[in-house]
Structure formats: structure tokens, C-alpha cells
Image (cartoon, rainbow, N blue to C red; front, side, top):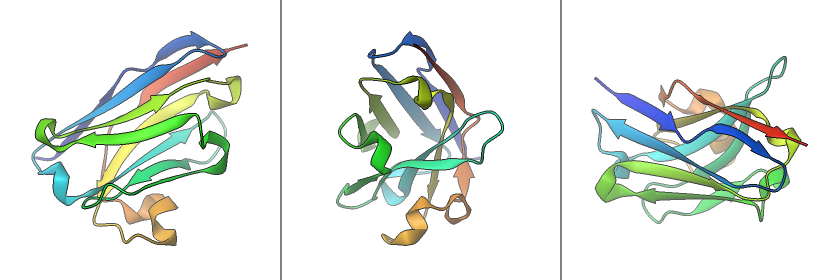
Amino acid sequence: QVQLVESGGGLVQAGDSLRLSCAASGLTLSTYAMGWFRQAPGKEREFVAHITSSRGTTFYRDSVKGRFTVSRDNAKNTVYLQMNNLKPEDTAVYYCACGQVPQDWRQTRPTAYDYWGQGTQVTVSS
């Protein structure tokens, strides 16, 4: 049974940092592309970051470039999202997802991913 479990969320102030983790079981994470998405109340789920399975090439939405870093530790079957200089508009539930996602426009689409975690809340106060 495949499971993705996110952790590391919390309540922080603007300018603070958090590191989210996504631990996988039931699959070998190194063979999957990974994505991070977020969903704020009343809004659609939106793409945040992506890392490919092989070379670890990364891709980010514009609003988090330079502040967020996605990385993977295949030995630990875990993917991370380091979030620095957090802003109130980053407040959302953050989800990790994995799938056999091509390195093109589809990596930003939730439908391209096969497995999802349950989400972790990130709240940034001003």
C-alpha cells in the first residue's frame, strides 16, 4: 500500500522558515517525479514545486522562486520543501504528490500525479 505522509507544517510569522517533509512507503520514491501543491481556503489547489526522478531537476511557481527549495533524499525515501521568508499569502494546506510525470507543462497539473499525501497546514501570520 502506497503512502505519502507530510510533516513539518505549523504556525509561523512572516519572514520565518519551515521545512516540510514527505515520507513515502510502499514505493521506491527515486523512480517517481515529486510535486508539492498547496490549497488555501476557498481556492483551487495550486502547483508549488516539482523535482524530477532522475536528475533532480527542479521547477517552481514564480511566487516562490528564490524562497522555496525542493530536494529529495532517495536513501530515506523522502522529499523536502524548504520554505524561507514565508509570507501570509503562503498560508495553505501543503500536499506532496508523486507520479510518472513528464518534464513538461503537465508537472504543474494535479491530475498528472498518482499518489497524494494527506496534507500539512502552514499558517503564516503578518
